[in-house]
Amino acid sequence: MENMLEKVIRQGYGSIDFTVNRDETDCLGVVYASHLKAWFVRGREEVISVKYLAQLYEETGESFVVTNSEQHFHKPAKYGDKVQVRTIPFCDGNYRLGFDQSIWNVTTQQKLVSGFVEMVAVSKEFKLVPLPKSLCQDLLKLEPCKANFEFVKLKGRGIPRKKKVEKCTGSVCVYPLVIYKADTDFTGIAYHPNYYRWFEQARSHSKMGNVLVALKESHNVGPVLRSVKIQYKTGARPYEQLQVVTTPVKEHSSRYVLGSEQVLYRVQDKEPLVVGFTEIVFVNLDSKLPVPIPEEILSVLEL
Image 1 (cartoon, rainbow, N blue to C red):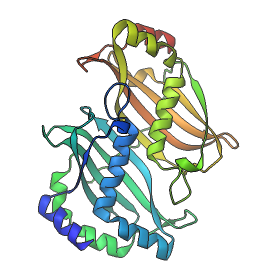
Image 2: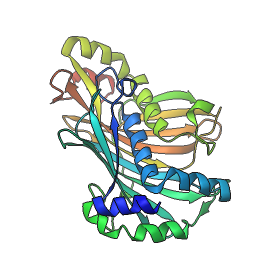
Image 3: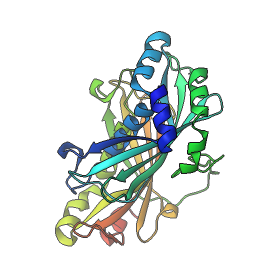
């Protein structure tokens, strides 16, 4: 890890470059959100070192799991683009590991995505354990890199805890889901970028999904993700019966932004596994410029 630390100190951040592949894009011609999240994973593992993480798991059974994440999507990445993931890791006390991350277009030097990820260390039984002392000592050397944060506010939380208030909600949609082995990683629980994919599927499965095809044909308009906040309470496991409940929230919406709360539940005991909040905007598919939320969407979602 020492050589990587020297690189991070020299640059002011860790970095890894990609060229966008065909299978990372969607029908709108841009990179699908779950792939952007997977790039963040590779960015973190580039800085911390896959070799170190694998050795830690092999010797102690300990691994790192995501507890909170937040991303804002500024501009799309397209097929063939050269992109760079920038990562600045830091310890937040003895138990929380934070990452300020961003994705940039290498050619234009435009920022495409900025975000924050919080992780904790757990045992093989998924019990919380302190961060490895050697890792915290190494990351202390990166304190000067905090000046290059793109998203995290110093001494702030990535996802502020807000008081619960009564919300005016629209039409609720329940999307059934089953987790399979291909959805998991070596720790035995769902690979967390998959939650982005499942949440998108749930939004499309809602009443809104019934009018998206018609909107594309009649107005050349489609939805894109503007921002997402997710809290991971416990991991989903193979073959569990789950459901995603999607609820549009009027208070978090505007003329251009559609806000929705999404919760992944275990059907058996109604336990919430993952809680998310997403913001969607609609864009002209040619110009990629935002347009007001179509009346057809507001009507079908009862907002």
